[in-house]
Amino acid sequence: MACCRAGATAKNIPLYQHIAQLMENSSPLSLPIACFNVINGGVHAGNELDIQEFMIVPQFERFSKNLQSASEIYHQLKEIIKEKYIDLAINVGDEGGFAPPVRVPEQALKLILEAAQNLGYKNKMKIILDIAASQFYVNGQYKLRIGVFTRQGLIRYYSDLIEKYPILGLEDPFAEDDWEGWKKLKVKSQKSKVLIIGDDLLATNSYRMKEAYTKKACNGLILKPNQIGTVSETLEAAKLAKSYKWKIIASHRSR
Image 1 (cartoon, rainbow, N blue to C red):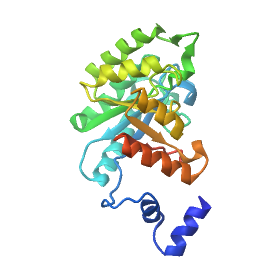
Image 2: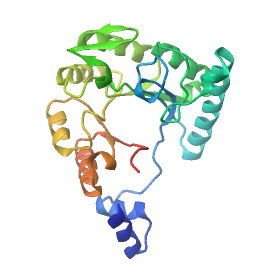
Image 3: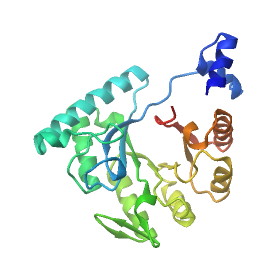
Image 4: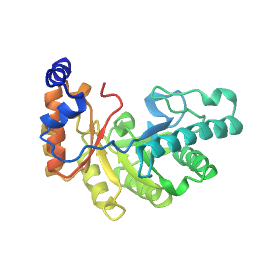
C-alpha cells in the first residue's frame, strides 16, 4: 500500500485515480453504491443471531442521499430497538451494527424494515446478508440456533427470505468448500437476480475465483487487500471479477 501511495504522489494525482490507471480503467469514475452494516450477529456480536451482518443498501441516485437515508435508518433503528427491548440492547457488535437480543433472522429483518417504513424509505432500500455459513457448518450440516439444516433445507430457507424481504444479496450462504450448495443456490436465485457473493469462498484469491467461475458458484466478490496481502494481487482479483461480469464489493475492512 505504501508503494501504491508513493506512485500516486509521484504522479501528483489522487490515490483512487492512480489505482484506476493501474486497473487500466478508462470509464468515468464515480462514487460506489454503499452498503451500511446496521445489525450484527454471529461471531461479530454477543447475541443469538447466527447471521453475521445485516447490511442496508439505499437505492437513491445520489451518494449523498444514500448516506443520509442510511444514517437516518440507523438512528431510527436504535430508537426502535431501545423501545422494544432495553437500553443495553443498543450496544453494538464488532462491525458497528446493533446487536439486539433476537435469535431469528426474520426478527432482525423486520426491525430494519420498520425503521425504513417509519422514514418513508421502505421502497428505496435493499438488504444484503452476510451469512458466514462456515461458522455453523458441522459434519455436513448447518447448525443454526433456529434449527439444523441440510444443504437443500438451507436453500429453501434462503428462497423463503428472498421471497418475503427485499434481499439484494447473500454473502457466504454456504461453507467455503460446499461447492454443491453454492451452485444450486445460484441456479435457484437466477430468477430473483439476487447476488450470490463470495468472501470466505474466494478470499480475494484468483485461483479460488477461477474455480468458482468454472463451477458457476457465485456472481459477486468481496474485495479485501488485507485478505490476499498485496495491492497487486487485489487488483488482479478485481480485473478477473470484471472479466466475469461479477459485482465487486470493496470491504470496509480493506484498510
